[in-house]
Amino acid sequence: MTGSTPAFIEKQYLGREWIPVTIRLVLAMVCFAVYFFTDESERNADILVVVGFGIIIISIILGFVVHFSTRVQNQSILLNGLWTTRLVKIDLQSIVKVEKGTYSRYWFNNPVYNLHSKGSIRFYTAGNEALHLTDRDGLVYIIGSQHCTEFLRAVQIEMGKLS
Image (spheres, rainbow, N blue to C red):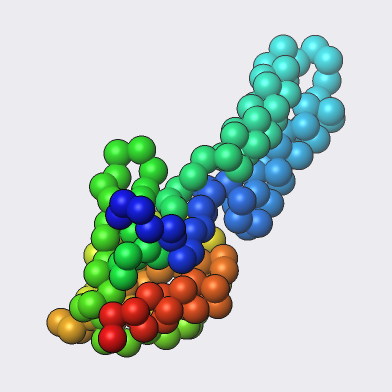
């Protein structure tokens, strides 16, 4: 990996997906609304303000936490995860098919890193699109991306360098 500039770099953040952000903000609004409508004689109602602000602060902090970063460099895809996860290197020489598709048919998907399930390995934080890479052994790598078209183009360029 020395001396070569990456053809594609993307960082995916945990707290920037709109559905979880909406859920957290609705919870905070419920806390503030319940606090507003409780009597002043209730001493425990003050905790609702603390919880509401805590939810907002955690939501802001999660907006800056990188779940994983994707790099296309030196005829390989490098996926580096959060904190204790290991670097995953997918060698493009072993890839036989690359296509752009949807990550999942579901609306709500949990962020995953290196999830082995049903003959595929999944990497996902947010969005609907993903790159599907099939290797010689039939194993499918599904890598979610916010910039799937650029990701696909970078992978195709790097695979073209192999010929």
